[in-house]
Length: 202
Image 1 (cartoon, one colour):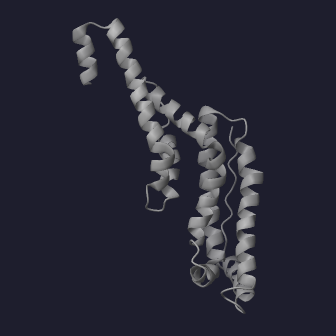
Image 2: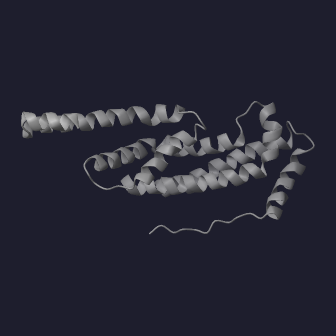
Image 3: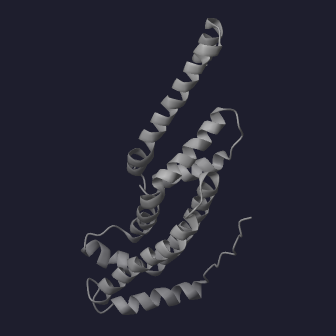
């Protein structure tokens, strides 16, 4: 059974304290100096967290168990993203645009995608497509789970379908074609012409 941890909600005082620390560190040189150091440490922290906490939690998991773990980890990551990008908003106001870097929200979401999906995308796709095939066979599945996983490809694009199209859509079309090709072949062997035509039209 998955353990549900209580989410810590930062008070306005905690938020202001965190923001003020970042502000004081970056204020002397908004476009370099501590700002650059802090930006690098921010992304080093993300990489360490994902590779030491998220990726190990996925190792050895398959099929629906893998998909459920991804769903939970992505949900956690979005909550973390919402808060830490607020704490480091001062970087977004000056350092990031000056260096022509992607906004922190985008780079934080992409850190998860690049590190997690970069390693597990094949397994994730196979698990999702397997669930979709099971539904086509008449089995009840958690449709919200599928929507949430497919939604990750859309979320990281932030309005663009780039990641969905390059990392999921093509394989989904191939799997769909393969599924119905196999079905049609089996129907030809087992059904009358009339019944076959009815199934094909459906």
